[in-house]
Image 1 (cartoon, rainbow, N blue to C red):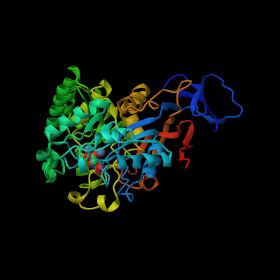
Image 2 (image 1 turned 90 degrees about the vertical axis):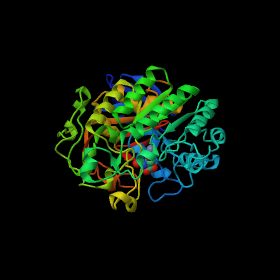
Image 3 (image 1 turned 90 degrees about the horizontal axis):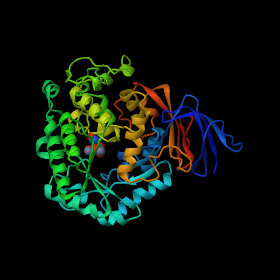
Image 4 (image 1 turned 60 degrees about the vertical axis):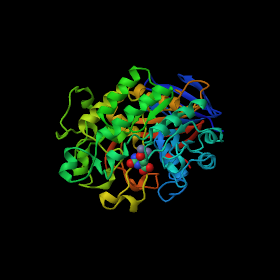
Length: 461
Ligand SMILES: NC(=O)N[C@@H](CC(=O)O)C(=O)O
Ligand SMILES: [Zn+2]
Ligand SMILES: [Zn+2]
């Protein structure tokens, strides 16, 4: 194994120091380290973070290897600074048996670019009718602890209760895609002024909030762990705030796109929600031109009705974006998760109503977080690495670089800017909402157990 000496690097924003990586762990930290056998990586101007951990990734294998494979998605993750991803169960076949989760887990090991932790389905075939083999998946080689029907809501309250109760035995967690299906029949985008103007069927905020309210009560009643996927509304934040104040065992995630984009982009307006919104306190008009300072003046949306902006839950209003940002800063929302949702060209570049929902996220997440949060490295490390690792129970991830700690880390150049070229992404799909946008912050290197997966901004294998 090669040793690496990263010189003059700021560890999570601290004063620059050297980091020596040897035999898969951080061997030493300090000033002027000397290691003649080590490959030197000049860390001047770079920030070292614990390797990012994504609690919500769609890898599409098995079944849609044309859109993504475990290997291509793992490479996209490494390029984005990730060392671990949790792979959602909505594959084909669905990851609802020990056999499928072990297959995904094994493919992740073979690719060797990030740790791929499979998520198991809650119900057989994601059909919402009967519980999948949760215990068998937990006992499998993949040691599944997170279960989710993501893409679908576990809408039946009795099934949801049973699932929450079942996973208590092994400290598991149910990750809910909160969408009351009766309230979103035929829904195409956020229900509001823009959907009315565009003539698209709306997806009301209450469809999300009603399920979260029900589920925190269920989790409280049975004393189980609930995780809420892709929170997207100000009302959801209030439900979560109250539940957490009561001590309910609930955690929540927000995606980078829900922190930046609003429903106005569907109409073709070049509006990005501003970081300043987080401090503005009051509601903000969904119509005002709110450019994100770093991203201003270099971007305009792809055009009205471009399905690249179709996603579940839908992009919401500037008021929601402001509430999500404030909740993330406060800790009412625990983590940023990408909901990386690759789709093949034919499923995305078609008429809005026929397009599949979902956006790429892994390779742009850190840049969007940096734009939205600014260089708050402690907060970024907490929300993108430490907290997701804790929630998922990934013990060797989410640890700040320190002697003896597994060398899972990423090096960021905060001063670098890059232009998102969809064809140059490591993902097999192209459906990024940030095409040709100039983004701040570049991943220079990523190390998985002391071995580089990305070096000089390029994938190593
Ligand atoms: N987010 C999406 O719009 N799509 C996801 C499913 C999901 O996360 O609900 C997908 O699998 O494509
Ligand atoms: Zn979902
Ligand atoms: Zn998802």
